[in-house]
Length: 354
Image 1: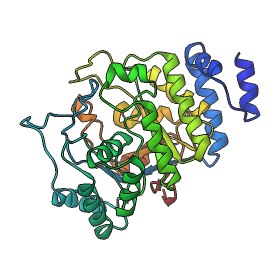
Image 2: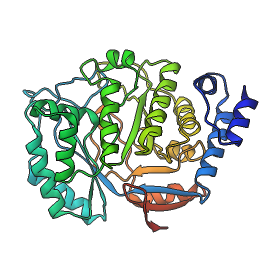
Image 3: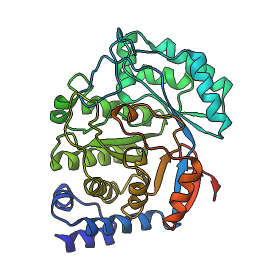
Image 4: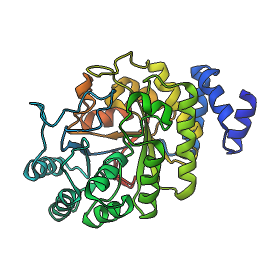
């Protein structure tokens, strides 16, 4: 099997599901890592490692979905429930701009009262005040929820948000794109087809997006493989995914509980992502969940991007994981691994080399 896989990769031929499953369950870690590193080198021969200066603003922690893997959400009547005011959000974005930031990653819970006019007014004001910042916000679950709450179709919701100033979508809420798994860990959330429908519509509108995977919450190896192929097949349609970001479930303070995936499992899935997603240009290492040292190792297992500096991050931190890296530390992390760090935009245009 390994010889056949190497031959296909040498000729830039895509692998099938059987080969992917064998790589995940039958190949040793270093062999898989070498294959992924080879794909990375062929796609990114310049040895650059990119990152974006951004901030993750969680505009509300109120959520009706109540996913079992989430430690961040609160009921609307909970003493810790909140919705940020526009002024609070503007102050956070101003701090981002003061740090030279170019990306606003705004995500929150599925609040029962926040309809599309709340987001239209916010995005319009943000575009006027901070034209240098890309509004890279709202997961497919949020877009779908806002559309339903507002009594409009999902495509119309996206078009209106885009006109107001939304420029690109993060791929959050993907978890595992297999509905049997989703029913176990997030039964009230949209299914994988609804997630895909939002991404298709965004790509039709010319809005780039990312795709993610949260794994380690009880799914099978076959489910991980299926997730990757569903992302690859979506990318074949319209090509709107700029990056893929796999990260591990963080069990602390969650209803689901359980154990956290190991570093070996993280590197296996990351490397497999690079090998299988031959049509997605960038693979992002998740230092937010893995820490700096594992993120550095990930650069030799297929990753070419270190994501954002994240001046603020609350969702993963709610599960008891609080890795922090400054811009200078990210630069040194990449440089220390023998790569050339570069600061980028949301859409991977290079802004600065170090």
